[in-house]
Length: 343
Length: 216
Image (cartoon, rainbow over all chains, first blue to last red; front, side, top):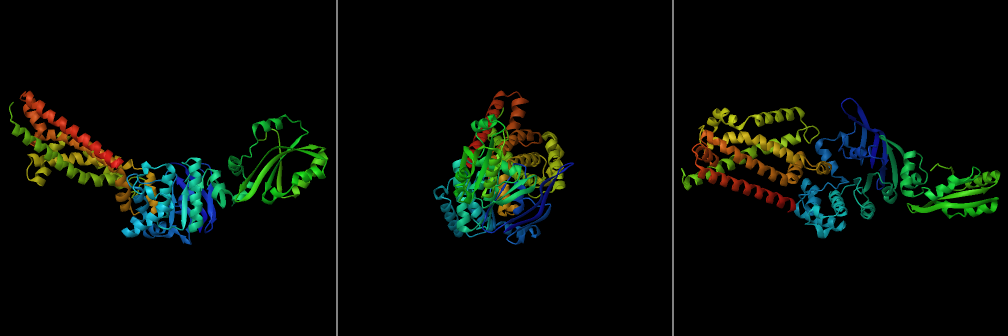
């Protein structure tokens, strides 16, 4: 649906050039929700803006629905943009216009007839549950309501793609959940492909099918949300995952780990999907002459697949522990040793 | 008192005529100039940097000439346009030359206040440059435009007093010729009093209007 081919975006300042995007290749499939996560300045905003040419790539190509926008005339480009909706972190509504007029704006620009505009806007406001606010002005609305107006406006021209620029970053957690549910609903009911950028891993976990991690203008890691969350490869991805998975070792447990003698071994066992259903630990205890001490653990759900990690201390003879670990390694889990001060 | 109330009334009407007409013409000139100053600058909608630099320079040149000098300097042009170089009508020409660049700058600053995010939304929607100006930029700046035009109007009242120098008439002229030069304190107090009320009234109306537009 959206294809990036070796996209570069380079900003020339006085005496240096900064690469906001440094060779991005990305394929976003029709009907999926794709998230790009990165710290500020990583290039995610440039990446999103290259899709509807709010920023023009310095080189490379971006195609949307099989159409390379960079080759279009100004008029064709304006038409193409009507098939790409966009919502923003700060909503970007017209304060001088009512909710109704804001949602109607893209239709009015397109020259749609008045009664058709009326019908369509009423329908959209009902969809985002703001029918009673049609005559209100944006400054009379809460942040969540403003974003819903933004969403209704973005959907007005029935786009096939929706770009979300940090759409929930200015909202409180509860409102964020509402907006994310609404985006999911839009994706499922209308089959609109969603590309979102965010710095909040919670947003990715909540609604994305696939995710890419961007750093210094390059995609350093990508995959299904489950894969990236359960087995992040890069330090940045690990950082993001840690920010929401609460697999951080609590201070009290860390203290216990730090105080252990060298002979003690603590392991983190990550259970992936099917692994969660196995009685792995009890089997280890039965088969090997080791004691198991569970220090900490949490189980959560990712894309409807259970996912969790346990912090376990293995007590016993070194050789026996080694054998136990080999056994654990063979099952459907990922195990790694946790060392003192290695949090 | 050396003048009667009819003279004061006539002067009042002359002031209103000078200020009203010069405001009208200078807004007609200043508004498009202000818009051009905003949309042609670097990184803007219709970036035209050389054009912007020239336009901005011309505006600055007119802004730096003291009004009293402008008043006499453009007398030939005034004669060409209104057929005479003295009188209320003749005063309108230099007033427009004085106020139009000023209004252009005021409008520029109002338009620059508009949230760039709104303009980005316009671009994302596929708005044409004209649609962006008339359906996004101007409506969003409207309240601030009203306030800035109020400031321009009050500036014009002040400038119109000097138009007495070319026989423009008006309250300012009355205050100078009778109140100041002939020591007629009563005329001075009455004319200045009327001007104070006029300015107060204008500012209050401008504020109310701007608030009404903003709060709807």
